[in-house]
Image 1 (cartoon, rainbow, N blue to C red):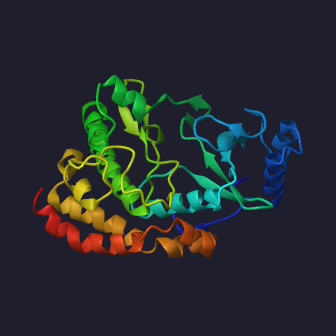
Image 2: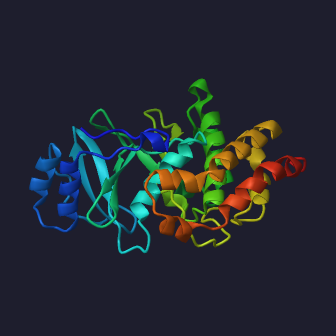
Length: 301
């Protein structure tokens, strides 16, 4: 049985050593997939040895563990331990009231792999999912956070006003990506779960980690200044996320407070000091200013 990761570094756990060894063997292709699945207690293999796909550039493998489908992603010669950083970033985001895919960091001989539980499966059944790219293209909309929010407003789950919660969470995700320097937030890294009556629900966040490049722009439109990675730009169209001025202040400050301790959180999750410095992009200063500046900027909304 693999442990489920909680929302904080104190709940960070590693899976049993036998599973770590099996994953390490699979990574080096020194055992057959069937032997790997057996050693993990999985029911049947869903793929061959690690390869690129489904989607993304990193080698990965699909498998079932305790009758639940997981994806294991490996490093691909990265300078930093990207799988461990991704796991730590996903757990960090939960502190900002952002739902993220369940993940486990798996220690290898050299670095880590990350195991992510699939959110497009439930009780053995497939859940129909669309990427934001497909959904926005079908709606003839540009690729942008405000556009995705408005799509949720039109086609989101109406029961209990779930679409409102999804729109507001999408705003927090956008701010988190800006402050965390996750500039790989392109439209295929956002997904919608489609219900039986064709209503959309925002999926758990995935593929979230800092790029360490400080590009200054995101992959999707943020606001009136296009894809510029600034809080001013994020605030410029915050009304399209059904947020009132006080709600904007609350959400930005919530994310900023979490981001203020990002280095301590990553360190508590086992990320090395060298890797933390590698992915640093002056976010601490930016997040510290965010809480002070957002109230002033919000007056222009």
